[in-house]
Image 1 (cartoon, each protein chain N blue to C red):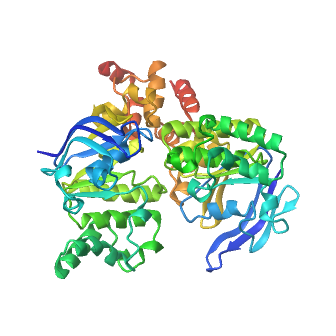
Image 2: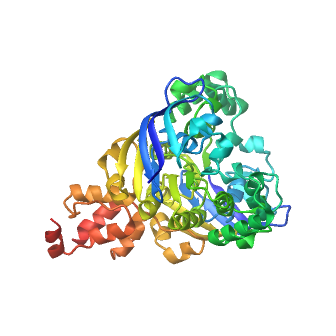
Image 3: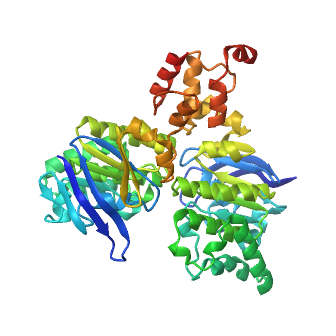
Length: 267
Length: 288
């Protein structure tokens, strides 16, 4: 299911022009990271994808559905959106009920709901916490509950807004595993992140936003090597990309494997 | 002189079975900048709350052992006495802003009003502190109209005006974007430069390596490691125990296994990595 954004502009009722003339296609099964400083329009853009916000002008298509012509409740069957702050999204009395809420609302039969819930809980390491109230869990685990409650809806498109904020190394690795599994399943994953190393290690395509526009869009290695352009929206290249540059590597590297391979070749 | 002195400190939150801090023995010298690292749930926030007196005065629960800061013990002091010596910055500055004030200037004066500082001195202290943290231009803005980085700098300034001996920061940049992170670390650095004792719970090891004098690694409520940043942040124990480490350290460790990294010490920062990876063959002989 492709995402087509055509000449999209969006102005908030306050008069703030948050998105300016954005045209963008995201293909089925792509893994895309969106980066850029606060206020660049990242969250405003992804909220257009499930109809939470409607274009001031232009058009957003999710497959053959125009987001302007379908209610949010219907778009929810195609686009899942995990909020930055899990506390804005969790409300059920236990983890199992929370994760079952989405698929049940999509009208799935109870056996299918149960299968989707089990799968989402397994994927997020939550199987032993089914009966726990989400608010008795640490912030780390509440984040995983938020992820699970969207994954259980089995949408073709999954959006994560700042999934790694406030997470420790173990949980960041767990979230990376979830994203890798969704990729295997052919899902489209769109992730907003400030964690540029996480972006470099987990996404093939990177979109850089600045002041409501798309500044760069392309293969991760091509985008993340453009230090000067990135600096205009206060994004530093990933640590290993910077190190490679300083060591005079001719090509941009973005993870350990690429770095070590280049280093060996240069010896 | 030790400004912080913890002796056999064990603490349990109310209604919990296992202690959040276990038998902590720890001293911090006046003027030291100590970073506290650890996975989520290791006890970093609890340690911060203990230093700030929230444990036990606000959270209650069972505290045993002695918590001494600036010569006073927390069990024998009230919270209002305690805050004169220790300032705490929360993860999310939004939780710190009083909500009772219309401007940043008034917000910064709030703490001083509460301890009865005369008006003229209050004004002078607020103006000085704003200069130090570079937020003078925000004085007449509403605290709620600011970016995350600006808000956190306001929160830090509101502690600075109180002139505490010890500044405790609980992951102050975890909700910030990179530009906010840089702003906030700039302020913390200048406070430390002025001789304030700083205890900083933080995941971002590259920043710790640049600024901290000393690092302790917490795991399950206990101190696992305690030493200099370059010692602790490159310890193989960190990766084993699920701590975050710098990409420079992990890639150099792989390179070391492949025989490409020639130095004994692993890097934490970009500069250390550049230096280690650019050794010429003759230099690398010397290092061995």
